Image (cartoon, rainbow, N blue to C red):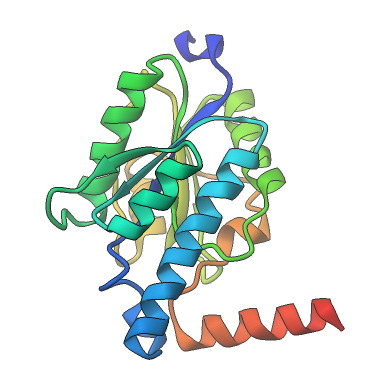
Length: 204
């Protein structure tokens, strides 16, 4: 396969404008905005720390997220207006292939507070070994937090309701590794409570 010449993935992080992100958490508006910016910043830094990641791109229309991403060396792909997650993913993929045309492309949501670089490496390694497009489902099993495919195969994007099933239909295979930190996205008050509890148990 052509992409075998570059075995490190270009990771496209999808970061919604922090002013309208994470509203389902039901937190005060400014607290929600700051949390969204922090989550995106942490996701970008963790992506850079992964050994099997060769570049990090951030698709966003948020100025604070953009400035932080540039400061740590990410390529910012600006949304001229809110595009929706699937068009944003397509825009980021296009730029990733322009920058590194022989590298696998991964698409990653920006709200993974426990994400560990070794978990990113594990899924990229699984993809490199098998070559088929992969997805990682969220902790509920119905959503999608991560996709990866080669540069010579451009399957569609089906983020949204029941996206795990949609990505299966689009030709992605569920990753066998599916590390927990890559599955635990932060969408609801219940997710936030579980995160606080797990951090408290880890610290005790």
